Image (cartoon, rainbow, N blue to C red; front, side, top):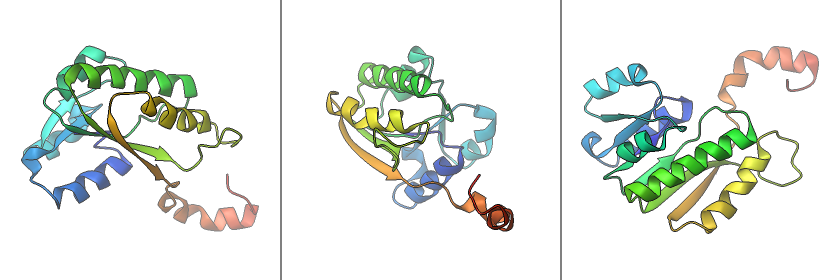
Length: 159
């Protein structure tokens, strides 16, 4: 299963994973099922997930061996931690054994990035779980910056 499958990164993960296995063996966890209608038509299994609804996630995660966890857009450290804790509870209840977690390079305790606290918490929390896991540290998406390069050069900073 891939969570956040209709988001920017999620779509790319779906495309790459689809080259390695059949679409029927990939379950897509989505927050807005309407955004995934075309994917269902393409043969993917779609499961609605809400990071605040443990029962719904447990049902969606049941039968899943490997879960690729792409976090929500929540831009609040405690909120993101709560979502992850709910997801861990659902994974444990559903019997998920393996987790690939998409993290971020800014995970140092003294990093000024607002979400650094969440990304620092993540590996320590996973180490105390019963899951087999891998943490993939993603870099900032640079492609959305391209249309703003002229403005950024003029301002001589990154907004």
